[in-house]
Amino acid sequence: MQLSVFGRALAIVALGLCADMANAIDNGVYTITSKHSGKLVEVGAADVNDGANVIQWSANGHNTQRWLIAEQSDGYYSVINLNSGKALEVFDWQTSNGANIVQFEDRGLASQRWQINELSDGTVSFINKHSGKALDLYGFDTSDGANIAQWDYWSGDAQRWQLNKLASVENTPWDPSTTNGAVSHWPLTGSLVTHDPTLAYEDGRWWIFQTGPGIAGKWSDNGVTWNDALAVFPNGLSWWDNYVPGHDGQDVWAPDIKHYNGRAWLYYSVSTFGSRVSAIGLASAPSIASGSWRDDGLVINTTNSNNYNAIDPELVKAEDGSPWMTFGSWNSGIKVTRINPVTMKPFGPLYSIASRSGGIEGPALIYRQGYYYLFVSIGECCKGTDSTYRIAYGRSTDIRGPYLDKNGQDMMQGGGTILDGGNSQWVGPGGEDIMNTDVIVRHAYDASDNGVPKLLISTLNWDSNGWPRY
Image (cartoon, rainbow, N blue to C red; front, side):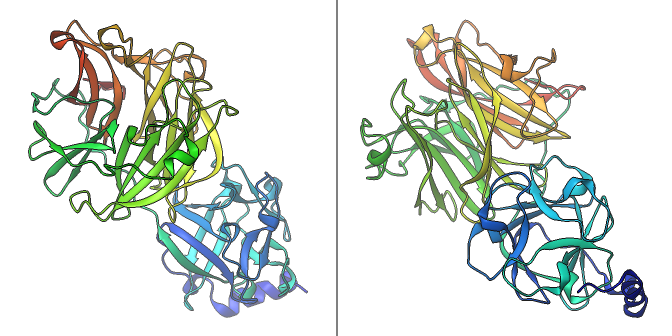
């Protein structure tokens, strides 16, 4: 049975609580093992619902026993279950000893935030921000299914937890952007025929991947003069046909290239025009320049029974460094979901963040100075100089939205402030990607060259109110 409150108070004095605590931990994916029982903290029965109970169980390798732990801006940690995408919390804001620990949709509440202290024996304690009480193996029970609760901290083995790190989570996104900088459209030359470009910089060289056969690419030593690169999968991949039977075997749409945890990750989509029978795939390499691309397979797929479309993926790094993915097209619009840092594939709920009649797709999502900025292509593409693509944006303090434009209109209700509506030469700009927070790449149809889609790159500036501009 649990020690009495009086007994625990004596234990705190005897052990010297303050002297037993040291620095906090690195962000990452961890298992959490009780020092007392040797068993792992998990969400019972791999339940994905709000309010599901948190217990201990023998190690089984399931994601319900894995937790994404990341420091938040208040100095406390969120603890997110890698199966459900839900946060570890003290149920119903309770402050009493024995109050239950459950999972719930993460809303940044104090009951969902934890101080994590390294202890002198290499274990850690979890102290809830709201209640000030410790994560506790209730009743010192060593059996599978034993409950996890909170209790006054007294530093016993039932409150000591061993963390085993399975994957890293990166730091806060880098923000090199300039406020009220000069307009800068880059004077591009070379191989410029492009559709849906994504841009990366690696070891002194610029790289672009784009819609085309086998994931077509380009490279540049200065970001201005562009050369064609070899396709990533010039002969396509056999599994694409399993998910998109009408696909031609080579054509790949709207790739996205990002670096994360020391590896280059290339998301891309396979589909046919006007269809929701689509698939997002993933390839990765130790570096872009190596060309050693590994097929990491399917990320997510949709069929005609879905009301959203698995195309136009983009890897997003949240404020706390954890990975997310946004994607989507027309239908019910743009989605965002968490990404597992171990597999770099989705887990947890899908969140709807933008919708619009008449066309919406090609999301690009970045974090900058307290806001998430969502850029989308609205209107219709792929019609040369008859295209009506325009780049619009909104922002939110939460990656899951709501995203509001400069007039306060929700992007789920058709909102979106226009960043780029094109001009007499460059028609239908869209398919945009944002590198860091200060470079925007896109295509537009060149009216002076029979509407051929070409590459455009500009410096992305920001006004004094935190809104993007050229």
